[in-house]
Length: 132
Picture 1 (cartoon, helix red, strand yellow):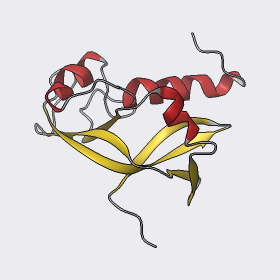
Picture 2: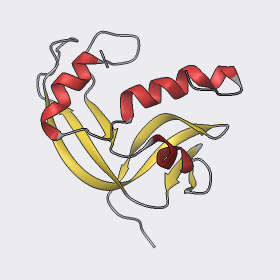
Picture 3: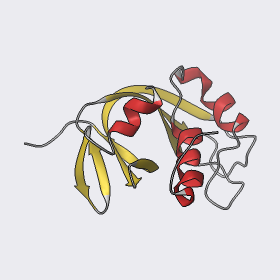
Picture 4: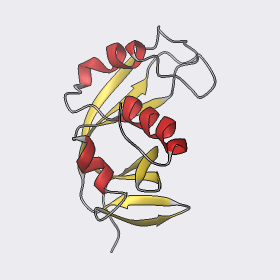
């Protein structure tokens, strides 16, 4: 079990890890991973429209909440560097877990997420390129 203080951050941080961190994720594994982890819409058994997996180690992702990210507005933090990600997009709309079917795409993108006291707790999206 991870040591995190304060304790109220831990459940949200653990959910972020479970749903979005997978160093070995492949585009052909969306169905198996999402259904296996029972990832669904919040407070529902319905399939999520999309789920993004970040192919990086946890410390690298967590560093975005500190020195590796910048404020992006609305309480979000944007990574200073792009990450390798797999975006899984739902194919069978209206489905329920564990019968969700996804199409996976590999991308390299900057990422936005919410941080709480130095820990990522909510993935908000990815960005193709930054405006200067």
